[in-house]
Length: 153
Image 1 (spheres, rainbow, N blue to C red):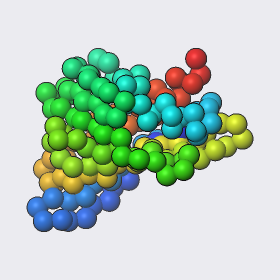
Image 2 (image 1 turned 180 degrees about the horizontal axis):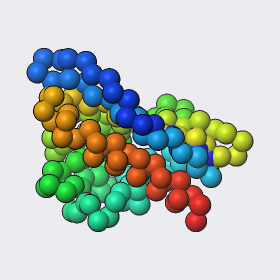
Image 3 (image 1 turned 180 degrees about the vertical axis):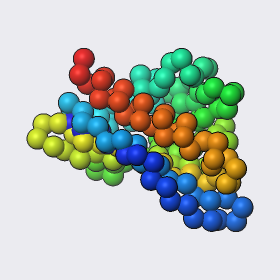
Image 4 (image 1 turned 90 degrees about the horizontal axis):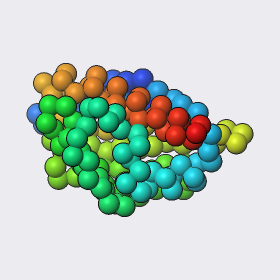
């Protein structure tokens, strides 16, 4: 199974003082079926396995949502926001997040494996975009690689 995260896809649309920022992680191949990956990711408790433990703190979770602090003290909260078949999982920002965003985990079956990536859509001002784009791209690439490693064990 492949889990796909693509390189930063720079697309910006102005919405008031904010712009829509999109990022696609690198594509990865995961040794599991899409349905297995979706079930794993639907439980927000499992997201801790995909995060860089040396760069986060205060991870809290339930089945439906999680929150954690990243370096710099910013709290990110994620809430499970549904699925589309066995090939898409949606997560949205929670109240504690510094700006609204949505993550889409896109999965494509490939002969017993799955190819996948993470797509990010966020509403940020241009100043914040310059600060967060590279760290978020690195985070999503890290998460996709950790998912791939998780199913190699």
